Length: 423
Image (tube, rainbow, N blue to C red):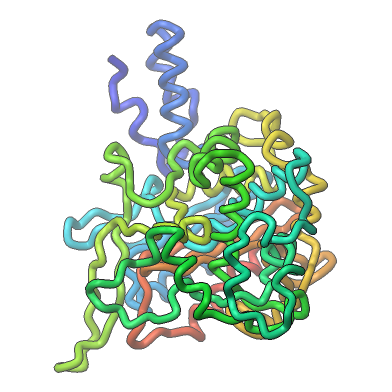
C-alpha cells in the first residue's frame, strides 16, 4: 500500500509532483499512476510552485485577513491564477470552529449564485447541439409561467436569452416571504411549490428593457434542460461539465460521506436581542436548496473552481490537455456569453461600469474588461473574476455573513483590490 506520507504534503511549500511520486517508482505502474492521480487531485492541482508572491499579492492578503477579522468571518480562502496555474493562495480561520478544524486547501465551500454560470453553460451546450434557440419562448418549455400576472401582455414573448441575461422581468427571490420561521424550508423543495406561487407573482417590468436579477429564472432554465435531455439538472451538469473538466470534488446539495471531513460549516453573525452583543451562530455544514439548486447549489474546494476558471480562460489544465474544452463549450460561445446585453445600473449587484452578459458579469470594457460572478447564500459569500486578455484570475470565498454589523465598505474595497490584481 502506498505510504500516505508521500501524498499528504501537497501544500504551499516548495514540493514538486516528482518528489511526491519518486519514492513509489519501485511500485507497479498502476500504483504509481494512482499516486499521481491522488497527488494532483488532493490539493490545488494547478499550482505553479516556483512562483513567488508579489508585493501586490502580499498587500492583498493582509487586506483579506484584516477584512475577515473586522467582519467576524470564521474562515475564508482566496487564490490568484495565471495561465491556468495557481500562483499563490491564502487561507485564514476555521472551516469548523467548534471542532477547531482550520481552513486548508481541501476545504469545501458553497459557491451559491456562481452556480448560475453552470446552468447557463448547459443551455449554451444544448443550443450548440441544435436542441434549442436562445430566442425560443420560455413558455414553450415552461407553460406554467402563463399563470404569473402579466401587466404588459408579454409573457409569450419572453425568450431563453432574456432569462440568461436577467432581463425577463421575473422576481429576484424564490420565496415571496422570508420570515425565517422554523417550519420554513430553506428554499422550495419541489417544482409544484413554485408553480403554486406563480399566480401570486407579477412581472416587475417590461421584458428585455432592463436588468433585474432573478433566481427563479434559472430554475425555469433548468426545466428546459431536463425536458430536452431527460436528465435531472444536477446529473446533466455532472456529466457534461464536471466530469470532462476533471472537477471530481464538486457536487450539489448534501455532502458525500467521503468528503464530509472537508466540508466547511457556515456561520452568521447576529446581535443578541437581550444583551445587544454580537454572537456567531454555527448553521452547520449542509443545507438543501431543493428545487432552486440550478441558481445556487454548487459545493467545491477552490481547486475545482480553479479547474473551471482554467477552462473559461482557455488555459492548459494540469495534464496539459485542452481536449475536452471544446466538448464542454466552444470559445465562440463563451465569447458570446461575455458580450454585454443590459447594463447593471440598478438592483442587486449593480455597479456603474458593469453589464450583464449571458449569466456572467462584465466589469469595465476593452483592456480593462473583467468577467466574473458573485455568490451569496446561507452564510457563504464568494466571487471570481478573470481577465480574458491575460487569463489572470482571482477567486475568494468566505463561510460567514455578518447580518448584525457588516463592514460593507471594507468588503467593497477588498473586492476592488482583488480585481486590481488581475487588471
